[in-house]
Image (cartoon, rainbow, N blue to C red):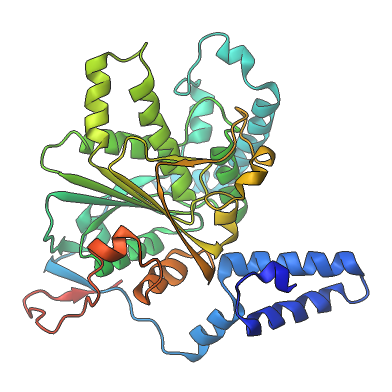
Length: 394
């Protein structure tokens, strides 16, 4: 069992070993192995038992604090009618399951009959487009923070793309924590949840290319946003922060831009040079990288930050490259992470963005990351804080 646990603390290893023993009692060696694997997988997502014991017994973590220039009621986006909302809630998961079945069929036949007709990743009929549709949205500063946030770096644009099982309030809370730590307001590309099962299945599809044609709504939205924002002269730097499933979405979007730069038939030399110049503004920070493809070939800076005990990162960023032949997408490609700086905490477990990544960074983990060396404010609660800049929490 200790071999499974790696660098986890001795006490936690004993707890996991006892759990595996209890599971395996009367079942045999197979039960022990399964119990140990399940225990380690659980720790790889929710963190080690000691972490939760400390969380329960220790002081409650304060809500993220953000400097506000002016607090006001956030604009409310118009909601759909009651009938439309009800029907969508009833049928959404049903159609997502159809989405899965068709995706498996799509993988089996490799959509060769569509590719031979010249179809591209952007081509789908109406039915396919409906299956790919989600309630993704892009939230401006006022919508994220509930007012006009203080921005000391107007020439920078920070965007956060969340992972699975993130309701809107939780995703906004992550943006506020990013702002508290790094002193930059952060816009939100919200990747909405469809529940744990469908979210995981969607990750599998996006990661392995089960749907070789078409793209999901969050991917299309992020690509359109970056395409528009990178062209603006007012921004010298665009920083994309992504976590978990958000890294799959981000990796696919980066791949889309890379394809444009390298497509000599569809784009002229001038067009490809413009795209390359725009991409040079982009900095990307990947937490718990689950993506199959992540390349910093044309971006200004790419970092991948993972915990060694994060089971999701083990399936992506820190997957053993010697076993790459076992983990391929539908194009036959293994996991690719290139032109990036890797930061892996060998003694950390857990997958959640704030408690398992940002909170440890505040305690000195990932110290080589540019986020820690160049952006982290060290102590966001400064003594000379102005009374005219009230704080607002989640």
